Length: 164
Image (tube, rainbow, N blue to C red; front, side):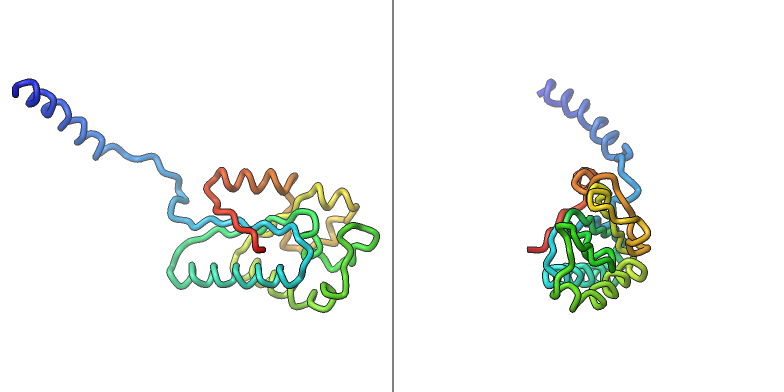
């Protein structure tokens, strides 16, 4: 019994120290972090993604939850970040995109400017098709590599969402 009491006597101070010790935490632990991956060309799918993002940020705002929501655009996703028709590229606009372009651009811009959703474009995609930077919507930030950016964000605790 004496050895048991000695063990308890040693453990209690340790528990007290552990309970009082500060736990390292990032300043953004209470921030909802989400990255959406847009590498597709279908305007209906993009519209569904915008609806999903709007619903998410509205929920966070209603619940007073801080959020950091980003869309990383890669490959075909570039079609949604410019009014350029991207002729003679693998990402050229089609009739379905042209029919919905103004609506999609307005919704995307609103998410960015009003709701704070960050728009990040893979600069490899932009450079490969020779699209001048000034042809992008002003809210777009270039990142060196879209897939690397997504991996970095996931490493930093961002949830990954891709609309199918």
